[in-house]
Length: 253
Ligand code: 1GP
Image 1 (cartoon, rainbow, N blue to C red):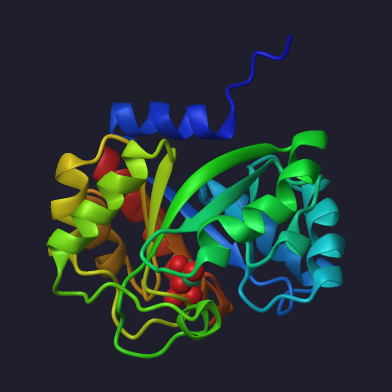
Image 2 (cartoon, rainbow, N blue to C red):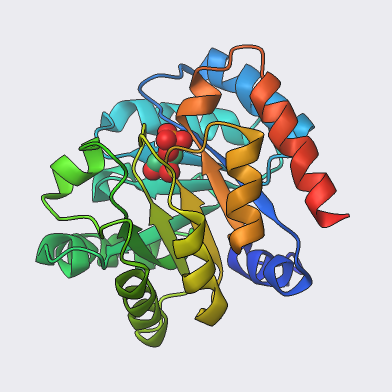
């Protein structure tokens, strides 16, 4: 029997012990395997905890090429952040099964899940049921447009809290509050504080985190993991990532 903790169990354990985590999101359409290898090795060396791969508008073949290739290069978990069932790739370590609970689009609450369920049961891939919540972030992001849903207004922390708690009570195992890729503003720290103060399951925050200050605000407000996408893509020398990784160590000290 394999004694390694599942990806989710390790995340829950880290939350319990106050260990903050960092994920970097790769868009497989923007990262070819060779570039991805270089970036993934850099992320692993710096102390990134998860590589997330996927997105709302990803071509199927790019993710299917990238994930098996990256898996051979690094030890840190590769977690699929799927924009559609066609982004399921068995070679990854885990898949977030996203239910978009901030919206009222039945396809993204249950429809896509029905399409993917038989396949997911058959393959050897950890599935993490995830309450996905979009938060208004100062612009119309791709995920808001494609999902055809309204994000939660960023001054309505009460709505965010009720929504996250509903996800927890429905049995989802983590909450991901996302301003969407390229968000103008990150999720407000007051909203993170409100949600994290009552939520028992791990809380992930992403969208618009561009600096170590943004990262620390989110962690200190109660995020268990933050996700960086755009800032990493625009940081060819990795200096912002280096600062954020250093801040993560300090926050835990
Ligand atoms: C998007 O939360 C991720 O789903 C990352 O957002 O690209 O703005 O960092 P950014």
